[in-house]
Image (tube, rainbow, N blue to C red):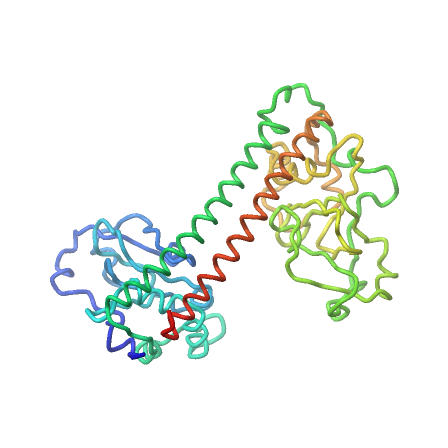
Length: 398
């Protein structure tokens, strides 16, 4: 298939037209880097007068393709086809490159040709500048080659990729709606809007823990467990990433040897334990699943074994990040904190619903989590399909 240099089929960073620059009072859109999404669209952040932005910002119009040129925004996929701007013209971050396609290339097709791993990988190699401030040079764009079938074929390919990308986005939106639904289920079942809420007794988190020694624990501390002691397989080690989504998830896998585990046994986590992040991203929580293999935690996690006769682990976990009473206590103790401790967690108070109400809440939450897991699996499959189609299109095989 015929290929062509971007510099021959698109203007790179076009200048502001003379006829436009003479109208300083004209209303234009404004798009900072934060409003260029990694999901392939832009969200204009209000409007400005042309005279306010014509110097010091990047000019673009409907039909142009934007791509971030600075690290890590470029590697993360910040790019978009500009369309639907009410005022046609916009200005934005100086860290944008602008591609204006000529009559040989369809704008949406051009967008997909630069919104893919092949482009990002090659662009990353060609970046210039110091660490943290590396940028994709204009010359890379001018010399980058893309397959260029006939215009009608470009539109056909772009339509296929568009439909697949829309499926991915809609599934993600459904997942976001499930999160909002979970908020409502909490509020109306075990939260402030639940029936009988005013009559519930306020108790400390410590009072909900099991009675045995070590039911609330953190660690290991200091040099007891070093990164250099992690191995490729063995006994699992849980960290912030396992709870950061406010539900248990496997992400980065860390292990220690069985011999090291013998030293760390007191930090073992068990099914139905609640883990809470206490360093870095604090206050995230999750319930340990029933099928957990033998595992311990890092020093970034507090672990709570709950007395299930009086409290459901799922209620305790969700209350840590959803209950406004707990949020207010944290605000009163110093607003946003970057570290918690076990004493703080023990002292937190929460209105305690009847155990049968908590159990009904747990049942509903597990149903929502199962639905979400199925949707996320579908999103992963959809993105795999999308990436596969993009790669085939880039090779001229679609």
